[in-house]
Image 1 (cartoon, rainbow, N blue to C red):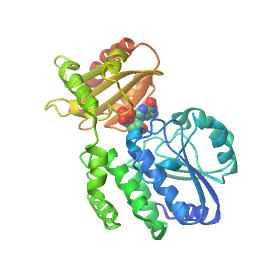
Image 2: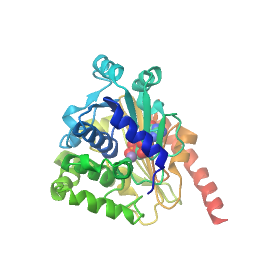
Image 3: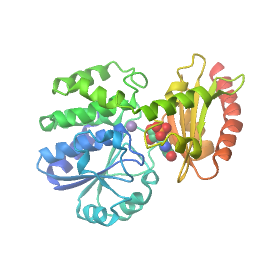
Length: 343
Ligand code: 5GP
Ligand code: MN
């Protein structure tokens, strides 16, 4: 991946010339959102700068081992303090999202501020306009993009084990352990370079993949055993969980992470959906194989978005309505896609 030279020069100029930075990422922050912001924050700290990561809402506790996570500020919880940090900053980094709508009230604050803005993101169709933009949808993860930025803007000297651990985590989580969205051979060279920094790979993998609770395993068993259905005659699988079912298994954030990918393991399934009731609405997660565009489907029917093969949305209303809207629309959408791809 070769980034635009003039953008790299502008980016390096901002990092060298400015003193205080705020790094932001999307709501429900995942490994890539946290990894990319925390990694770049540590680089800035190593450069002697002031840098703070502000997330719109709380980071899940299963990422509590990530280097730098204790320094996080959360807009929803600490709005006044966050506003002060934003007011004092010269540069705002927009990372792993490209539309201020994705960060709720933090977006209103950012839109109303007058800063230098830098976007570093891998989602399609950026909405936000920033002074410097690294918008690369072909990147496996924002963390991969940060890796190339650090290399090509001559900032690699500031990379330490913490930075490498955060970047490695983001790439691993956004590609399901290098299983999807990672066909570029160079991704292995990136991982090799991160390993060369001395990161503890077995420990990261245990933290990421072997840290589940018994409760979570039982909830997964229930979801796969009783709640996994296939839309008859179509390669579409669906799992739903309502609030009573979640309550029964003492659900905590993160317990259903990865469930939607499991249904995609079924041989002929092309589209997998997970629909779950949440206090603030209904969360919809979609995953797909081949070039079935789940981001387009969710943009069209649920005002959601994401990537070609992994997208999400929030639905305000009863879960049954969300499920009906999904099942009624996915079949014609699939039929249309099939017709188009047969051409
Ligand atoms: P997940 O299903 O894991 O929540 O999200 C998968 C992908 O879709 C992520 O890249 C995430 O950024 C994106 N995504 C999740 N929820 C939303 C949403 O409500 N709106 C948009 N535009 N994208 C979302
Ligand atoms: Mn990402």
